Length: 169
Image (cartoon, rainbow, N blue to C red; front, side, top):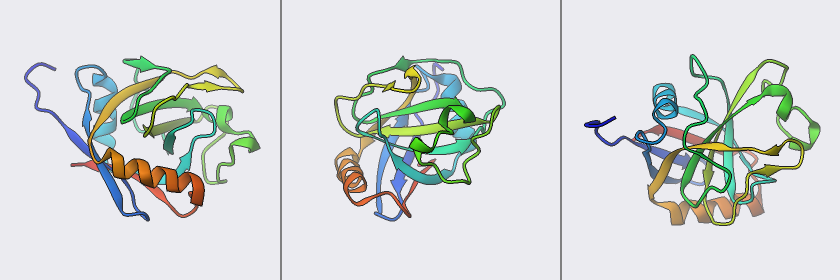
């Protein structure tokens, strides 16, 4: 990726009118960055994590020709990390997750989870499946404080009617 110009995206919570800017980590997760970049813009219902702690995320149908390998993995994301997770639909299909009926949670369906971590002390350990490493593909470089406040509000006030959006900056 030498010689490539830095690429940036805007991550936003539409209803709350807040956004932040993230730099793509093309040097550390080139295949994941390419897949996400080509799929932009993306937006969907937002969820606040139950297991990872300080995380918001949205679910999408698979958008890459092939799912990226586990490049630049972590199980301990830090504030401002953007992570990519890929699940088989049945992994997320239990009622305890609370996903809408519109989510494609059938066997064989790939579900992509794009997440933003907004505060410290996260651990990607799920009681149903164990460790869930994510691909760190972006890092927030501007606006994390305001986004973190909105994420806390989302945790307290609820996520219903809110969307998490990703677009090229």
